[in-house]
Length: 381
Image (tube, rainbow, N blue to C red):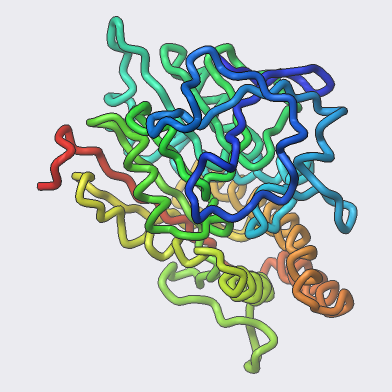
């Protein structure tokens, strides 16, 4: 088993060689030939069609960080996937943690929707170890909590840059990978596949869903989670107008998200895959497809019908406001890389922060969930 340990130590890392992946895959942004690979004991000949396409690489954070990340505007960014323009550093992992906590609160303290279904699928069965895959693991918070909750399961987190700042349980490991290169080496291995907030780095959403379904064992569950860039009014139906486009009111959070959305689409991102998540996972090998939307207040202004619910809403709203400020700040590199003047970007960010500090502006952010169960037969019904 490959396991992540604290930074500064040498730890084994699962990393795929690009020359035995999809022939249409984009070339890596760095030369992996210089890396010191050691073959896994069970790795087959790379020329074989059944090869797992995995290699073991002994990674040292002090020695190798520059190979996997680069610095820009005072932040660190991944070198594996040119589509994903958000940072890959500790401030961004901290933002991921806030998003994780606010969504857990919105889900009533759960780590996933449909808790009865998920816990039934992950129930402990003698002589059969359960397995969980988290695609886009970010800070690693979801993986670590799942590993602690389901000690009889192995949890694998995959991301462009792994967070090496926190200890991990023995049943949890993290792997570097660009999931656009395909996931066939994971096929038929997992009882639960979880994917959260990754579409901005995905180049083909349809193929991505195909890979997720392929990773599931029969009877396994796929869960996808994506946010909606559009802010909503208090009725949770009407989108809030965008600022700076005319009219007397408008959301600067919505405006800056809209601008980022358009830039990401032009760069080839499947950022509109979030809208597909809201429609549900309509795949021929999935059954019992369900969807749900959760609305989180953007700021601690919402009031519930009980004191406890009000406390939950205020917690969610505060975390969402902090997340929004940090998220929009993290977009600076995307905007400046696209040629926008830094003064314009700074003005947008100032306007977002002013809106978030105005308790009279009431906006909701929507998170879309979709899940389904893989059929026990590989033949579509």
